[in-house]
Image 1 (tube, rainbow, N blue to C red):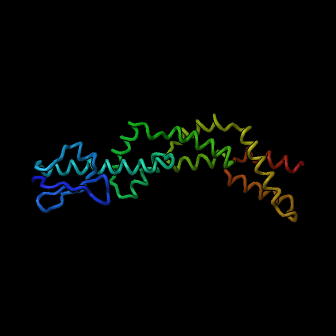
Image 2: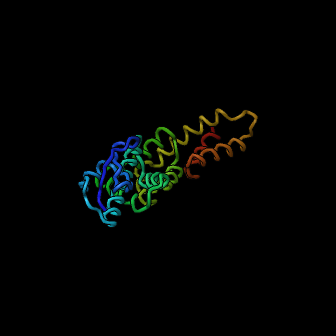
Length: 209
């Protein structure tokens, strides 16, 4: 079939409608138009149409990914999930991810470092909660464990847990018994992601005081 008309799309710019006679073949990005050197009079086979369509889908998917990344950093898994929800096919998403990697626009390790830093210093998370959240974002568990051992030593955990427990204790009702206070503080610190090895000495210190 032959391209008989190329018309700029009004609502999805920069994009172009490609026609053969009065039939709309597809709407493609400007980058795809240039890449395949499409113009009026060019002959296209069914295989050409499929190749152009797949290439164009990757271009739109890539642009959508860039929009997400321009707002904030994304882990690879969460970016894949968002693109999937936009309706892109898995093979299109995979090609897009490869492009982003080549352009060094995806870096899970860098994001993990920033996520852990913010989790410790801003959100006051314990290592167990940090590990859980990072695994949910697709970071390998062995990578998480190795980095947390370096970035979040036990003395730092004790410092954060002690700070949290003192603030929490100040909000507990005076009518609570010492045992009830210990139970509430223990549950609170567990929810924040601290292990019993960290929680136990914190509770003992508070009881002694």
